[in-house]
Length: 265
Image (cartoon, rainbow, N blue to C red; front, side):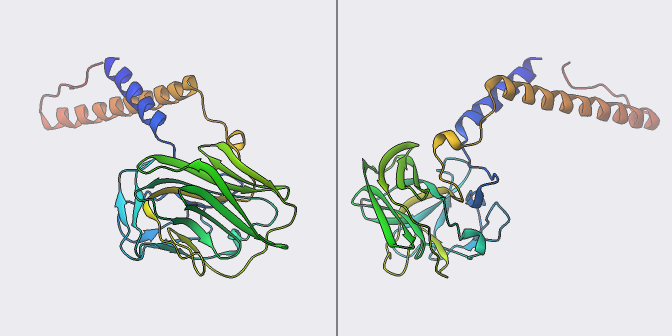
């Protein structure tokens, strides 16, 4: 019973500090960046918007969930295969978690037509290309170095918005639809015209076909629900262990060896 309590407490601790984004019906691309090795970056939605690391960006455990990619600000980037799923039109959200390692400008994610998210002059910035031309927006909250931030750009045909850690930073009214060009996307870089490389760590990049705020995220399970789910998993594990002990005991008896279970019940 003591071991079960320790397991539950430890699991709750992990859940509390892991904040990976998840795929839902409105997610068109999600790069959790949890591969941890190699050069391939996989789109968790299965839509095929996968990428390949270029320039030598390094995997790091300094992340918001598992692993992340660290970019040197010189030539590191991740080109993304472009599929039609990225062609959101009426509403969109582009978001990522970042930790800056320099005060230089740096692109977080960009498609040169129709959207980008960047840090310029130590402030969040972004833009979308619409039927009336490019709309750009510039934040007011300083994005400091060596601190994790969740940065978010949203558009809903009535306004373009920037969020820092789910708090609205700036909003500008606009009414038009997003248009699209054929360019692929990039994590940590943007071209042409937006050719700043990012210096720092990027994690959990997601594109959605709705304008997300914190309140539109899927509801998270309560602490009681988490504990119940963990208890069920622990009980299932104990049941399987008991069955295994019976099998091992029968084998030991057949072979003429003594058998004493080592578990504390």
